[in-house]
Image (cartoon, rainbow, N blue to C red):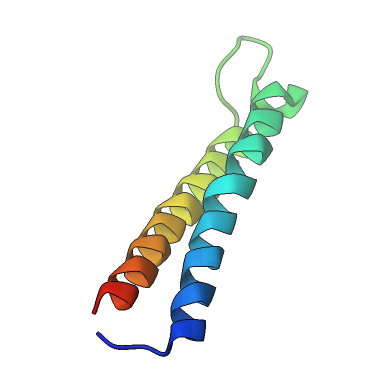
Length: 73
């Protein structure tokens, strides 16, 4: 796939952004008292946020790979 250099850079920056920003957010979610119930089991709050972060990081990694592959083409 061929893309102009500026678009490839946007993809790379976007992918890096996702991989840098989401892990600290997830750490805060794990520390949040709403993440566990009284018995220590994961709550919906934790499950929803974990899925949100996981999906965003997977898409971020894919975006990063696509950005680098467009540079190599």
